[in-house]
Structures are given as C-alpha cells and as structure tokens.
Length: 89
Length: 115
Length: 264
Length: 154
Image (cartoon, rainbow over all chains, first blue to last red; front, side):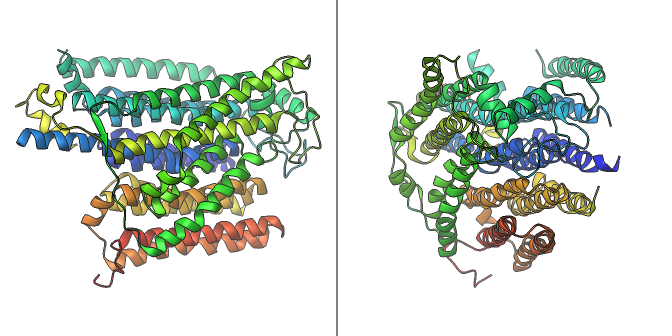
C-alpha cells in the first residue's frame, strides 16, 4: 500500500484541480485552475511511469494552452467593451 | 485501490460534462472540455500501469532488468495530448468568431438570438 | 425548456452515466496488474528493432500509420483555425503599441530564448533514445520563439516570425510523413515499414526510420504551434473591427442579463 | 518506498497541494504568484521522484518544466498586466514569495546531486537548479514591482 502512496496523492491533486477548473466560472481565473490541472496531470503521469506523456503535458499545459485561452478572453472582452461603448454613444 | 484511478477518471469526465452543460461562457465551456479530455488520459494510463514497473525507456536501464509498464497506452495518450491542444485552439477560434458575429459568448443569449 | 427541467435532465443523465461507468470499471482488469500482452510484445519488437524508447518505436514504427492519422487531425485543426480567424473585410489591422519591458526581465527572456530552443531540439533529437520526441519537443521549440514577445514586444516577434514560411514548414512536415511512407513502398516493403538499418541500441542513429518520422513530426508540430499562436496573437493585439458593427444593434437590449454577461 | 519517494510525497502534500489550492482560489494576483511557486515545487518533486526510481532519464521532465514554467508566468504578467498592477503586494509578500520559491531548490537539488552518479546527470541537475532559481526569483520580482520602475516607492 505504501508503494501506491505517490499515485494516490497525485490522483488527489488531479481531482482537486479538475473540480476547481469546472467550478471556476470566470475564464481568467479558470486559466490558473487549468494550469494547475496541467501540472497535477504531469505529476500523475510521472508517478504512473509515463515520462513521455508527462513531457507532452508539460509542454502543452504550462505555456501554450493558457496563452491561447488568455488571448481569446482578451479578444472577446475587447469586443464586448467596444460594443458597450457604441451603445452608450 | 484496484479501481480508484478509474473512479477518478470517471469523476473528471462527469465533472467536465457538468461544467459544459451549465456553462454561461463558451470559453469556460472549452476549459471544461479540457477536463473531459484529461479524464481519458487518466483512464488510459491507469489501464496500462503495472505495480513496481518502470517506463519502457532503455536509455539508462538494461532491458529485462526491471518490469515495465504498458507502452501502447502511453503512445496513444502522448499524441492525443498535443493533438488535443490544437483542437482546443480550433474551439477557441470558433468562440472568437461567435463573439465577433453575435457580440456575446453566453450560450443562453445565443439561443435567444436565434429565436 | 426551463432551467429547472434542464438541471433535472442533466442530473439524471450524469447519475445514469456514473452508475454505468462504475459498473464498467468493476469489470476492467485491476489497477497495477501484471497482465499486459500488447505491452510485452511491443517491448520485444522495439528492442528487436534497436529502439530504446519503446513509446517512440510504437508511435513511429509499429503504429506509424495511426500516427499519420493523428498528425492529419493536427493539421486539420490548424487549417481550420487559420480559416476561421483570417482577417475579414470589416476588420482592420492596427500597429501594436511598443511595450516597456523592465531591463532584468528583458535580459532574462533573451538569455532563456536560445536555452528553450535548444531544449526543444534536444527533446526532439533524443526521441528514439530517452523520453521525448517530435510532439513534445516541437511545442517547446515553438514556445521559445514567443519569448521575443515577452522580452521585447509584439513587433519584434512579427519581424522574426514569417507566418507564410511557418505555414509552409507545417505543410512540409505534414506531407513529408506520408511521402516517406510512399518512398518505403518504392523499395518493395509495405507502407511506412521500417526499412533503414536499425543501428546500435541507445545511440542517436538507432531505430531505422523512427528518427526520420520523428523529425517530420517535430517540424510539423513546431510550425503548427507558431501558426496557431500567430492567429490568436493577431486577433488579440493587431486586428480590430471597423466601427459601426452590424451585430451590435440586433442584440436585444433591456434584458438585464446582458450587462452581467458582458462583465463576466 | 525509499527516502526519496517519501520526500517527494511530503513535498506534494505539504508544498504542492496548498499551492494548488491557492492557484484555484482568490484574486488573480494571488493565483499568478501561486502558479510561479507551483511550477518550482512540481519540478523539484519530479527531481526527487526520478532519483527515487533511479531513472536519470526522468530528469528531462524537470528540465522542460524549469525552462517553460517562468515563460508561463511571464505570459500571465504580460497579458494580465492591468489587473495585476491594480493591486501590488506589499514588500513582505514579495520577500516571502521569493524565499518560498528559491529556498527549496538547494534543499532538494544538493542531496540529489550528491546521491546521483557524478557526470552528465550532475551537470544537468545543476543546470535545472540554476534555471529554477533564476526564473522564479525574476518572475516574483516582475510580478511585484511596477514595470519600468525600481519599486523604490514601495
């Protein structure tokens, strides 16, 4: 059982981060939960003896996905802001 | 312990579905879908795990010296992680396009627009 | 359908799915068991072909045809993103503002850029030996380029990053993979069969066609990520819609919920 | 289960889990700072795990994380600059976060270096440690001082 302790811990981390990602409704705050999920997944893949998959997850999860989501949020917000301004005029 | 990792995968999938169904923002929905994707990775790797095994990468160990985990599921998962990220990009591009066309990314408001 | 009814339908669906998943999980082979017939055969085959990273051997040799499908999906997703996010007629491009970056930050980012690029290339090059490969290393190498955006500003990145060139590289990687398979066909072997000499286990030149296909994937993924990020960066920083939007007036006003949605 | 794996478990439970919770709750500024710390702790956990399983090839994971972690943090700093600048943390927070993210690096890397077989692995470990220290210290500074200024008024 003690040998499985790292796996149980990593599963706990993934569960916490995954649940938090779904429950965080603001997209900007959700990005951080998503980044946390990426790190937790990478740790889980490492303890499941899958370094190749962990590398894949780290490469994608630390910079690429958050950057794309944040850029989308920025575009959508700018759009919403410019339209509100038009309505006020 | 023998099905705990599978249950975690199932939980992630259900949580992601809940997030998708109750989302009020399409960007949040894409994030929830990423949780669903993660559940498939967890399930696949859990199926391939072997207690006491190590990765079948023989750059620093001698072949046959230690038991190894199943490499087939790892190969499936590793390509899917990167391909999944590009699919996330495609979905986000659709969200940006929806916001340009309709000025909102709330699925409920979008349905009202369609009438 | 009211919100209440929808939530009830959702709850019933999720609970039913949960029950079926648990029932299915109980029939799966127990976690951590030692019975992995496919894994065992894959390891034997990979060692027979002198590829020390068995996962790379599966991806680029034993199941190379499957990876061709995966990379086609990747290419399709990138193509779709480029088509969806192209500049339309009612949009204009504005010059991005130069950013003021603190000097230590600039020095750090410029120093780390080559390190990140080298790490990415290292991960690609050692794919057949140690953990890594084209999929992972390609993303790392592509991320390196975007340190220019952090270190200087978007204009610096634009000067270095020629999107047509990277689109071409993406297509070359995508086309190179099946062309290589066809080339193998010419030698009389079957599609994507490992025909090159296997080399010595654990060296960079081992694995026959594995390093070659690995490099093609690395090129494609790196170029794909650069092209993808270029689309999103352009949308968020450079492209603005012309004034007088058509869609803005048609959105129902006085809804009460609209303000909330916009602020979220 | 050997000492290295036990240490990795302790690090995950005492260090990474609270940081993960901080990443998932609270203000954007707190989340960015927690994200920076979380990448450092995850990289250290990966180093301990690779030593625990006696697999030197696993250190590539820590290397990639050490390289990309600060990139992620700096991306947040650039894209969320307005929100982050709205509430700058006090000097005490800056100092605490710097110590928290830099101090564990030598505590973990030095024993791993001593235990690992000397050679290429040692060099790689020291390189990773250098990247982690430089990256996290600089990111914490970038997140807590106003851009262009030297923070002298703080």
